[in-house]
Length: 324
Ligand SMILES: Nc1nc2c(ncn2[C@@H]2O[C@H](COP(=O)(O)OP(=O)(O)OP(=O)(O)O)[C@@H](O)[C@H]2O)c(=O)[nH]1
Ligand SMILES: [Mg+2]
Image 1: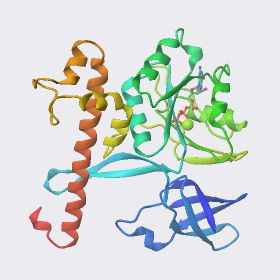
Image 2: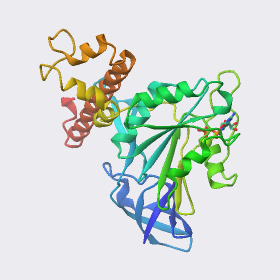
Image 3: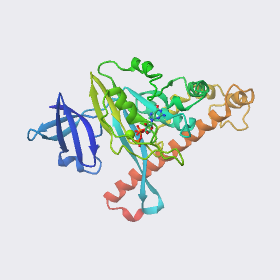
Image 4: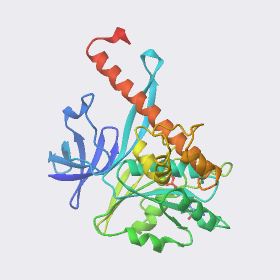
């Protein structure tokens, strides 16, 4: 049977198969070192065990994924362990929610957009809590200027403003994942879209405007053929091996760099540097250029660390521990 993972918590999974919901556990072979684990949104092959339980046999190939850097623990050689963590799979759009209060950060939006493009999704930036912001248009303009790949909307779930614009994305068979920091209103928007108070929400902290990490697990809901995935608020979203996503977000910068006289131009002092020229004449915004450099640098550095971690694991397995 083919089913879709609707909830994942450690080794506890819930899958949807037609109208039925099953508790699922992965077959023992999933617990091998290098095996990919199921995530919310995955299409999986399952075998029923009882009326309520089933066994996950295999994961179908994913058409899109959201991944982030997972730097856990310390390892031999004082190198931090760098892994990739897949968060959700098989979505069409990623709604990137940022509230129009202290949470707003263009840098963070660029990060989320890069990860979405890298993973094969379409980024849609949703500026929430428009009712709390006296002047919304400058924010819409700034986000739109970040990347030509980005679509942006301002909404308020309290007044309902802007929600009608989202209807364009809700066609049968679509899957949409909602991402963003804690307290931006992901679950509130989900409840509104699903038309029922199904998800717990809670007020942000007064002293610093931050959320309380109310949602603790990724969860998928289907309504009228539309699939929505709610996710817990993220503290940070580290980039790893997301260079093509960063390139996609800043495709104009890549285009400019290709016009430099030297192919390996470092955009320092070389003559004929198109980037420096654009910075000097103001056609390239300095903040965007710095953002691009930072995100690209982080993504490459983490990719290198990931490669080292993989190599080290292989060496450890083959008994060459001492060489590290
Ligand atoms: N003023 C205003 N408040 C909103 C709006 N949308 C959500 N909120 C409030 O923001 C708070 C946090 O909303 P949640 O939906 O719990 O936020 P979340 O993104 O799911 O947070 P986590 O589950 O912690 O990641 C709640 O008190 C909501 O009522 C809005 O459009 N305007
Ligand atoms: Mg929530």
